[in-house]
Image (cartoon, rainbow, N blue to C red; front, top):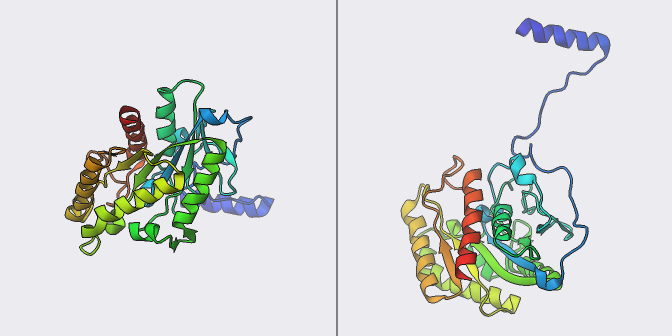
Length: 275
């Protein structure tokens, strides 16, 4: 085998042909190479807008595969310039060295399967990995994104072209520590109230995902999940989807690709069943 490669290199030098190595980053290998813009937008009442918010498991760290880049005319998103596009994974673009498959496209696909054909959905990404709930409340700039201001900007885009119908929330890993756990439910209520004030929808549905069951800090993560479930009992317009059976991608922190797709379907089912 070594002689073969040596001969190949020698031949390339003699003939002037360059031998290229495949240096493609496996994380980005299947990222879509081309954006596709919709030919036209639906009427405002027929474009339902959902906002993805939280930290890295909402921003997405799963491996994007070809099936995740197949666009459909009824599921839309935006690019980093704010232009509306047909949705292809990855939807988030704030952390280009980290972002991967999230649950947005699978959510949109599942949701439109159960909605009238006249209805399309627009999914707006605002999640930033590693962000704490306090950073959201304080509108801090984290990883070059001013969290609540960016959320407000995406809401403005959504309200201009459609109707805000819900928020998908996944966050809590950064708050799963002894100092922040006791305050999580209170801060969650404050932030969700702020979200609803910004959207102008006092009863805006919020679907939250539990933290995964694969953490190296299982007690702390479960404490966050308990507060999510407890808060949902008093907020009639918020529900929680389970994640205990989903797997991580090998880092004990982030859902794998199958988990992200399943989570998106569960977000859709929860919204359809409750709201």
